[in-house]
Image (cartoon, rainbow, N blue to C red; front, side, top):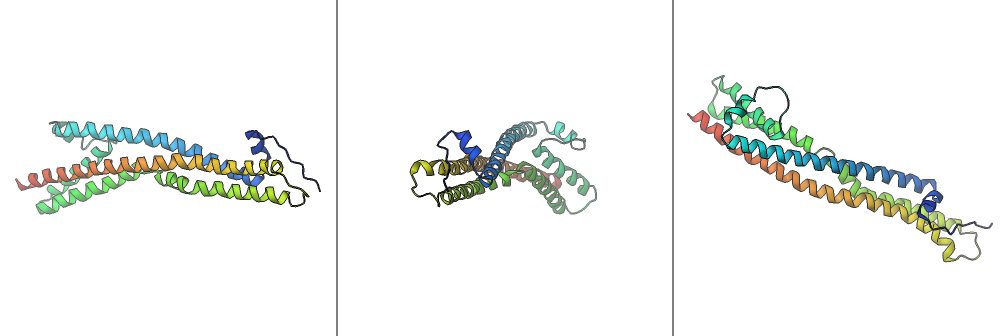
Length: 225
């Protein structure tokens, strides 16, 4: 049996000649890569907005705009994440203080309300990060699977050839290695973005924690009067 091999090393031709398993791997990795890039840009804009809104709220709150901020506590509609945390604590503080309960219990209740709101907001901010982590860690192995399958097919196809040359093996190996390249192309940006976003989110979370502690001190002073 004579094996007919094409020596055209054009990228498109190599992909077209790949086995259905390798093609399926390539399509899966391309989908993961496109989705990752969409999430990267979406998360980039989201974190920039969160930082900008947090800075704006803190500037207003600590700059003497307490009355404006307090007037918005009972308004409908979502505000920035940091203001949502503040509103949750302030609403709980007002509700518990009106019931003449222990002053320390009032502050602790407001603190718990802020912590619950904080967790909800951070869940939103951290959404889709597990997907980026999964793409970054799994894509190279998926690409390697396609490569191993493609190389195995290439050598199996040469099993009945009396004399094997590099020109006969090269196209099959090249088309298989494309899967590894696509896997790395999907994984590297996802890993970089995941690490960067994790760092940015940690800084944002620390900023919220500091505000909650400072605001809790204000509430403590308020109930002490």
